[in-house]
Length: 475
Image (cartoon, rainbow, N blue to C red; front, side):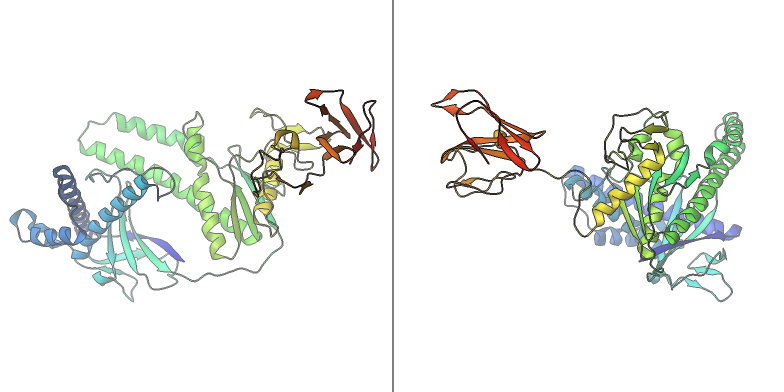
């Protein structure tokens, strides 16, 4: 499994300037490549390949207008073209339907005002982690790194990122082996919400920290100060940096808390089941701020990759599964209920906590999806009643078996539903009727005319005729 490890960098003034040049050169190469391909498309010319764009970059270094491209590592420029190619592949795959999920737009030009800037160094750049703990990058120097933990293996690439708060990070891609934990017998279903961030099927409730709400007062004060600054001034740039740092602190705190909670859940349970929520849709409602503050998608992604690495089972339950309205004791699906209804009673006599009941149903649905018998969360398709199916011999497909309906083969009706009763007058088959509450009714026809209905009733395990019409045999 490939994992990404992030570490904080502390470059000095000269190194920050060198990194700024690398960010700018990578941005220019990306924009130049995008412009060449757009112009070729508008002119109806063939699509420029990566090799052609790479040659153009090499030629551009020899011109006075682009001579400064030689001040940075050539790997940075080639990786910028690789990013452009990746963006186009994702766009074309989205257009053709090969890429699942939301539609991906066409690549767009990068701006120097983007809050996030990044460059990538591969093994060809010969970056190196020195014995003194510093990171050596070509044409940048030896950068100080805050090693919060050791790398499990030698990295294959490193990406240097500058965020909106002006912080620099080194992101290493490392190939790691799975480290399975001892197997356990416990399984848990998790219902994600706003009042309680997570409610477990065992009754445990984790309160929502609401990091963004707690920092709202400070953010409001910083935003007010930013709005008073003149556009283009240095004071406004400082105010923008302060706002970005405040938001970064909120995001870092949320991420750290979710990492600790997800690790604890994976360690304590052999299987974890969560509901597949449509976060993008919920973010368009009046609860958008609270939904973004919760960070459900990020938390579910943490559970998924940690479960895969630790040998645990992780599954998502269909978002349309009625986990809230279904009774976890009898399986009855009740009417829809308002959000302010936190407890409800089922006609079977069970009293449920809304969130705990949903978590139990999510766990049961996840088990059904993964068990060996192939059970389904939703009821399986059942054969159609004989009264709703084609049973006349001349209308039934010859030698074919309809989906869910058995065709008549001679005088034999194969795979008849046990809830259907056949009526005979001697050897003549009059028809079939479904059983409802122990009673089967058939309006038999004689020469195409309807007569009085024939009734058959179950008494215990035996079937009796209950009609004054012509003598018939119910089987």
